[in-house]
Image 1 (cartoon, rainbow, N blue to C red):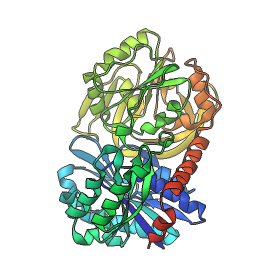
Image 2: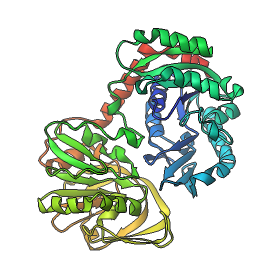
Image 3: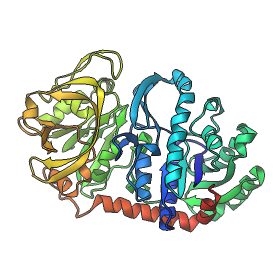
Image 4: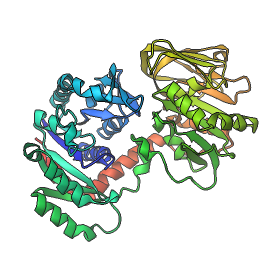
Length: 481
């Protein structure tokens, strides 16, 4: 079966979205297609149908393929826990936590798992569209590479290189990549394309011709900026910041240094009556916020210290005195409690830390990770609620006697006696449209009559249309081998 690889001249050049659009274009041609990313680094993960976890982008790409996500679509996932170390997930399960300088020693043994997953997908599908990571121009990382040219050559997959014109210097991005990579790696590149052009693409005709002439690579088009990109779940935390909406009820979200699974917020961000404010380091929690959300974190104790360093603990106390509400999700839930114990050093140095004391619960970190898709009911409204759990640690205490929901017959989460502080391990709950409307009604927001999942599907269709209109999609798909 055939495969094609999209690599970029840098991070965040639009590889994930291009792969999603090409997957949908291939699906519309009647092909059985699957996405694949050998190695990903992201704290925004999805739980797969086979009980593991992969990067959020690959879950979106699976959706573009009309498929359920499986662990083979992203066999190596790195989840940063600190500035110098990451948790290593292999074929959906935690293998180890490793310092960045020691990761290179692991890569040779990881290539076997990468190729195993790739060949399994390739045998099951007409086409596999592969996404690279970072850039092949990072030649200092070439030895033992499993993410870009090391994988492309091991699996014999042709490469298309993507440049991002929005960040400037796109000619140097592409020509420079060819100049610094090994000639045998350069021979794997079958062509290039330009992404994120604003304005009339014909203005870049001369630059496009120069790149083609200088590299000898075939050009597959100039893709204008996709205006509906914000409707698709983002994977990179640098995509979080955005302009606040004027008017509407303010919901403030604390942007932790190790924020995780932040696509929980997408359905709220899309509500016309909600002004979702991403509170960055050094900023105060807005005084007019009706709700403050403490989102997921890959390092609960580390981000709790980060929260206090910003003075957000003081802001939260003032917010509650004003009658505001607080929602903690996963790591944010753990922070709301009385204490967090990590005796085995699961998330860093072993030890205990006092929580914010806003819920009567205590959390103990344990080596086992809960990875599960779940469904149940929101207790206050009785409405169905669905999502997934992806966490380590168990939280217990008197406020758990007031659960947030029942999940598969068991109580889940905790609430304060006055109901203004809520904690839950349930990610993805705001995708449940009726529940989201009821939750927002508690804040005085009349939710729009919208189906968020249908809007994401429509955005994927629009993305495929966008690629078909501006790129040589038939030529790209014909490259696969």
